[in-house]
Length: 305
Image (cartoon, rainbow, N blue to C red; front, side, top):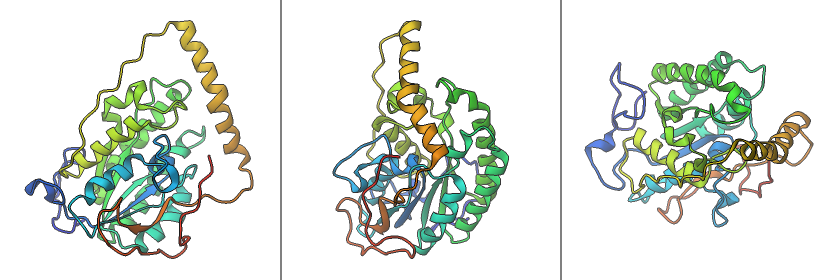
């Protein structure tokens, strides 16, 4: 894969320490990207990081990354096509085409999380589908960023799929190496295992978690930025009975309703991306938005998944 200014040499390590042209020119705006499109599900949409003043009422790590990338780049444009609840094949079918139509030079793709939680999902087959999608994206010449999933080992219920997540992650490292993509390894970001990094639903990241992920993405791209690492406030110790009671309350309030929604799929108006068109980021730049075919001209209001 060739970035706008540099071709990565064979055998270059794939991970958070990947070099980029930005390392040669520190300071805001010193990177080769001008049009960023984010693909994915609730993780990329920003669920867990509410911001009423933002499009769609959410912020999230992708918005935070776009904010930093747009600093000092008046022509920078950003679109976020992610929609909560989508599975891998839906993301590939519904988002890759519009993303390519927007002619991005930077694409982030995180998909498969909603697939891996189901008992019969196969991490090897999921990786094969992701590989095909990444190949399509990299053929456009865009820099592609992938994500290895976080470690859910300490999480009730989802700790049971830890092995499947690990297998998918290893496969994704192979996919990234094959297509010369940038890998952001959330499993290695051990701060994400702290409770303060997660939303109360334990399915999505908190604002601090999204901030930490944004910092990891910018480090992977070797882009100068203004984000500072934040240490989550330590939670008071809980005894076994209290922890068990809170786990039961969490399952009743969040897990069971979520599982029922996955099975029933009620007929309702489809959700749409919060930023369907590439455009300026929070007042930075003056680039005219481009409307990819197949997407609404304006973002609609989003319902809770």
